[in-house]
Length: 343
Image (cartoon, rainbow, N blue to C red):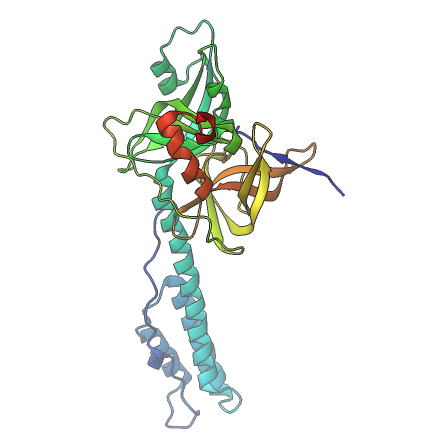
């Protein structure tokens, strides 16, 4: 059996058509028998083409094709092919197609609304002989700055606080040379992207959480909507949003696979109550939000099991439960240290 290791890795849309429409069932009526007084098959086809089938494109194609087949078979052998069967079949096809479209549209809307609250984080290391100012490096990433890794985060409030994993900004948190910095890519509430230097104001390695602060002058932010994790159920849908391998604004889908898991923290202790999911979490997703079907944050994407020696994800992924995050982050914002370190 291949062995696995738990890897906590630092990283490195528009609604479609309208909703369902009403089907005019009379337009799918099939003549009971091919008597002399009955309409010809050509007439039946004409009735189908002229019917007011207010459907989506895919629904219309399937429904009309089904109606044509129904008319033809009924004309050939009206006794063996009950008209009601084909009418029911056509309606069933339309319903299935409309349900599929509604589900797709719901996920698209969820991503469009939630992704505005997700940021991309780049760890940069300045060259010792860098002549550029920090702001110039953050905006241009010139040859004087080396990208050490990438990660994700989400907007906590309207004051520019960003929540992410500690291991995403660990180099900045422990830097004594003054050469480490974080470049944060943000989209404001109006959809305009801008870049700022992220300054670390608090971190807690025991829970693998950290808070950055950015200057938001001239921009309005869209903070993430926080949910709860104590009422989650295995099997419910969830979505991970982040920047795996530096690809910004990526959505992966899955379900809550398990609850109450334990995962290691950067300081070697156990983080209890973590959420297990099969939604893909890869290098760069760290620090991004795991959200439920309503777009509410239920966890912070943090770790994945990888096959030993390969670095390939096994599909067993973990997020820090949002209830843990809500208990920890306010202390980091106010005091810069976790609650337990103050006593």
